[in-house]
Image 1 (spheres, helix red, strand yellow):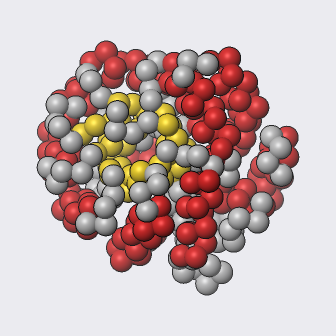
Image 2: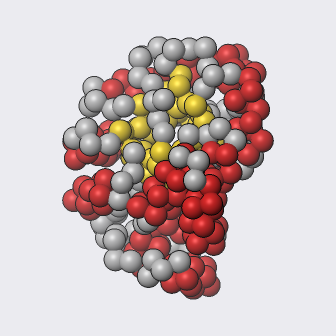
Length: 289
């Protein structure tokens, strides 16, 4: 398998003035590696990719690759709703030595099936392993099963990140084609692994990498009682880190723990005091704070 285990959908830390805090970014990479994750996903949705300028986007990827230095795999977020832009970003990131690329469904323009196939294939033709990112809540378009099955025949399209909230999708994909499936939701990681998934692209592992890694490792080894116990311990936290639009709650949680400054770029902004109280209570109950 190309990608298995826990891949942290890494936040992009910003300094108080809104610039990317590259020193803090390096520290977050080291924290995740120490926590035992299998890989890191820079500049995905959780990394606030829409608000990073192209130069910053690539600087973040290069920094993560350089700091990781081959100790974990790097799956760079280089998707776009313009095929030319996705190809350009992926080619640039490939030169840094990434292990794979996360390619979101083209958002807003909502291509038909043929357009989806041509878009993802154009990126895959670069030669970097591609993970399809099915997230209809963000892109307004689900990747149809027929499209997944056809794309799975491409030698460089190796996995699907399922973030549509459906465990049944994992079952259906595994029945239709030979392709890896990773959960895009911490709360569904265990259930998806039971159905043939091979890991999770995790938001929660930004703050509890060792705990999420232990959960997923137990599940992949078939120790489902152990995995279920860990899931139950963190289930409320898995839910509450999505109490507001991702990555607002996870950055707030990390700020509560003193890991980063709670800084966003508009249109992302801080959540309500009420939500923060819920989040803090959840972190305390899980033993994180």
